[in-house]
Image (cartoon, rainbow, N blue to C red; front, side):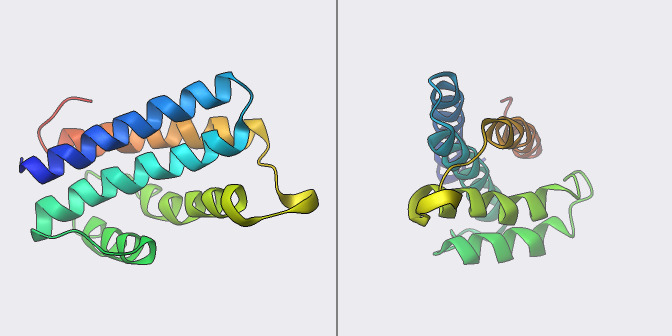
Length: 130
């Protein structure tokens, strides 16, 4: 595995740990955002390992991960759409106001669980235990 991909996986693990801690403190928006960022950085690790370069935007990561995941049967087919759906958690946490500005704790908890499986999968594919 390249050092860059390893760095992305380390960042993904930090984001996942922060998401879990945030949920434990009742900070559901921070937890949802962290779950997305864990999947985002795990995706960047996979993208970098396969292409030799990172994607430059959130949309670029989503598109490139979708494209590359199609050719990798060991990636759960639910992970590419999860990356897009989890981005919506980040968007709510970062930009929404009013009645729709809070992510329900159960939604953040589910996202954290999926992000953990996502990270484990990518780490395994790249030859590193999670």
